Image (cartoon, rainbow, N blue to C red; front, top):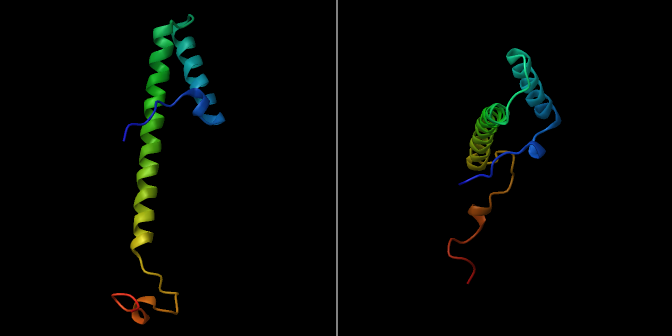
Amino acid sequence: MPTTKLTQKDMTESEQRQLKTLLDQARKSHGRPLTNSENNRIKDDYIAKLTAEREVIAKKTRAEQKKKKLKPDISSTYEWSANMHSRGRR
């Protein structure tokens, strides 16, 4: 399932601040303004990391939902399958 590339608009406020911090740190370490390619490389690396983290979270969520779906509800007091005909009412 192909996903669209994560943009800065799609990021949360804290993720945007983290990206800005990473860009500022890189600028300070180089001691000069970053070129467009350096900016884009840092952004792409950060977006790839975020996408991987979100995919791991989504995978865990899907697994939990699958477990819940398969687990029968033991709190139910009425068993529908025991009281219904297997071929329906005639």
